[in-house]
Image (tube, rainbow, N blue to C red):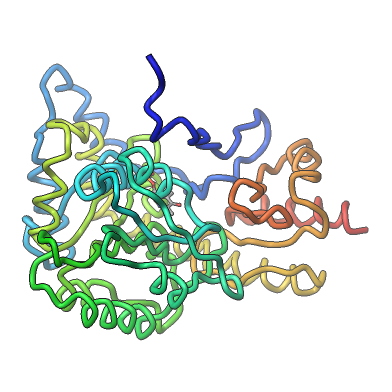
Length: 363
Ligand SMILES: *Cc1c(COP(=O)(O)O)cnc(C)c1O
């Protein structure tokens, strides 16, 4: 028996490494840990794990419905937003269809699309940010999904409200069908906002408003980053009930666990914990900007909880030196940016250690 040809060429996901004794700042995780209240909710939920979870995640949907002021039928929780990428691809991809994305971006889009028999067409970054015009040019009548990672992983760069809104308007003009689920329906635009909660630019998209204007738009959010629940695997999609309902058909019945649901509900309401992390990122980002600029080290201004910088020599060649010194970052060879590195903004003492190590190579 031969391996399914759709997946034969896929390279396995290469995760940020964990080195004992070093601070892992390679996967954009919350360095403050999860909300203590969310942790308590997860522990309580563990008492009942002899029972299957609520397959519809009704309470989580209700909490998200209140949070976003959106009907529950327009929310789909998933086993991390990674699972939602799989579900979207399973539901809307097929041989002969394609998806459009960006080469120097999150690799899971490509993997999900190819797994379900679709072809991935990728534009390149332009000035460090995804190129909406080039992406638009790649879209054809067989394109069923378009992936926009905003802010972009790994560069932290973003497109503003007007840019995203214009892109969606042009697509709507080009594919005027009222329904996505038809031969004439245009592509679904997946706006992956895994890092949106860290964005501080005034013109960062108000995507909730766009949802009501563009029925082909899907927004992905996750509890893995701001909320510090990466290990529990929980995220969600927001969109039109038509797309949510169609996508849900691809889902397994109990895709999110009961501890994950309970922790997510509580994390959403623990605004103090989230605010403390946002404040850490705001403060430490300013500190890193200042320190990197003083050292003439190139970096992309970021809207996320990480910073993409150029260590002055191929990042993979200095990775071990940093790891030995106590800091693990991510080299971006697998993202197609071999000169660059992605550093998750950490606690102040780790950012200082990071800068000292940086001085050790450029000195
Ligand atoms: C981390 C990340 C996610 C979140 O993945 P989960 O499966 O929810 O943990 C999604 N998209 C991007 C671009 C990410 O960097």
